[in-house]
Length: 96
Image (cartoon, rainbow, N blue to C red; front, top):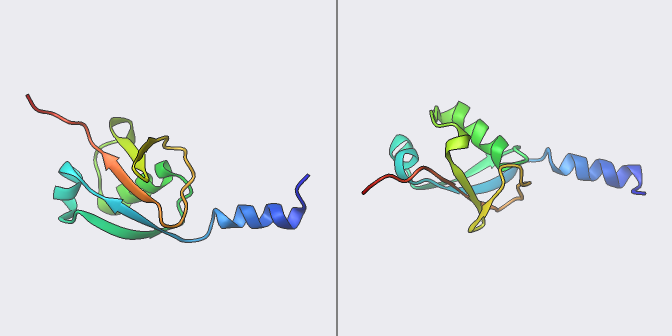
């Protein structure tokens, strides 16, 4: 069983600010006018981060329409973020 203080430290670590490196492609890049940014957040998961960015930047596409990559690997929206992670939100691809 984990001691209370250790458990509390782990809980608080999820609430602390972390810097996430985000790369933008397609319409997200066009909307923002940037290809990447270092973003400070308290978001604990990729899904939380996207919700924060949606509110801040007005992204119209729901996360159900996107894939997420964390540190160069496709990932779950529920994956815990760590300081220094690299995130890419991958929009639908169209073309012929």
